[in-house]
Each structure stands twice: as structure tokens, then as C-alpha cells.
Length: 213
Image (cartoon, rainbow, N blue to C red; front, side, top):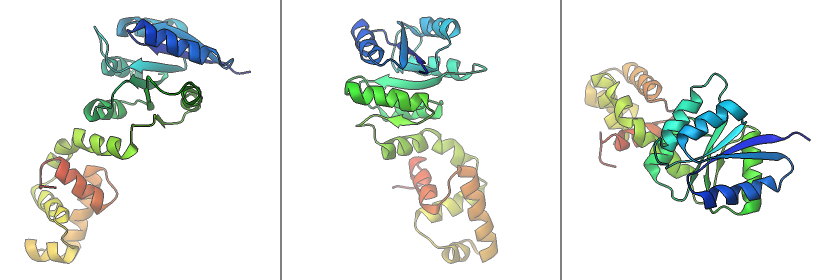
């Protein structure tokens, strides 16, 4: 049987031991623990775990900083964040930082074990209560302003009109340019924002404060 090594990083002994007991009941999982972010980095170097369950808020070095350090390693482990809450900003930052999932500390034991195996297999896991739509929206929040600022002035105006619901023809009339130019500008806007649709472009504009949602 293939055994997956898991590192649990949490400064609360009760949480750490509780999660360890749950996961160690599965013969396919081998668990080690760390109390702080500094200890976690040392444990990763020593034990080479395949999966790290990382508390998002810890003393000394918080979970997001540890996540960044782990993702910078030549052969980084899979990292999922442990949390007791669902702050949009923190979850979005972790998502953009390369976290493979989010587990609530009060997750049902059977579900927790299943999620850990899914993570170890390369899946993305969001615990019940952490909605994918909320994470997506929060992720847009985090970088929306910078992406909008990267647009050329006319592209920014095109984005504003898209967010207002204007068609390409209406945009061409408002800006007094050709329809072909508008189509080119819309494509450039979508590429710069990193989105595939006008709806997501409009959402980005709202999150960036370019328009009132």
C-alpha cells in the first residue's frame, strides 16, 4: 500500500493532536506535526512530506508566509490551509499563493480523510462552507485594481462601457471608432484582465472600483 506523508502545522496542540489521530487511523497516511511556521519549514526539509496542512494564522510566521516559502522550494509539497473561519481576503491570498485547498478544522473525520487523499492525488479541495463562488470573487478583488491599471486609457473606457452593458456597436458609437477597433480593444481587455468573458470583465471592473456594481 502506498503511504502518503502528511505534515500538520498548527500552534494549538489540541487541534494538531486531534487531526493527527483522525488521519493516523488511515493506514495509507503517515503524519508528523509542527507547532510554528519556522518548525514547519524545518520539518519539510527533514521529512519531505507530500502534503502539508497549514494553519492560516500562526505566531512568528503566519500561514501565508509559510505557504510562499514552501511554494518557492524546488520540489514543493502540496499545501492546503487549515482554518476555523472563512475570511475572503485570507482565502483569496492563499488561493493565489498556490494553496490546493481549504479545510475547516471542524470537518467531519470521514470527510477530512477523504479530502486529504484527494489533495494527495492532486485534487483541489474546498471544505463545506467555503464556497467556490466566494473564493473566485475574492480572488478577483485581490488583483483587480492592478489589472485594470495595466489597461491603456481607451481600453479602460471600453471596460467601463462593457460593465455598463454596452454592446460593441454602442461602444463604437460612444467612442467614435470603428467596430473592428472595438473588437480588438475588447480582446485586449479580456487578455489583460485574464478573463474569458465580458461578464467576468465587468465583475473585475466593479471589484476594482471602476464602476459601481
